[in-house]
Image (cartoon, rainbow, N blue to C red):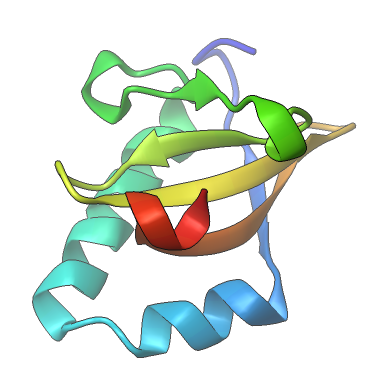
Length: 91
């Protein structure tokens, strides 16, 4: 997927619960990153990468050096945000 068209993002209940627990500053940063993500999933600033092991079907991108969003690709340019948290929390 390239930056040619925007992506549709859906949110799991777990993701919505997790993001509410973050500071307002971090929530704002996550929103900024989501805008980048919607325009280009592989924008270099996001460090989007495939996961391994038990999460081998999932992907993640960075909010900052500590926090990441874990997601799953679906058809029709749709992704499902699974969770947001620190590297230890979401991996």
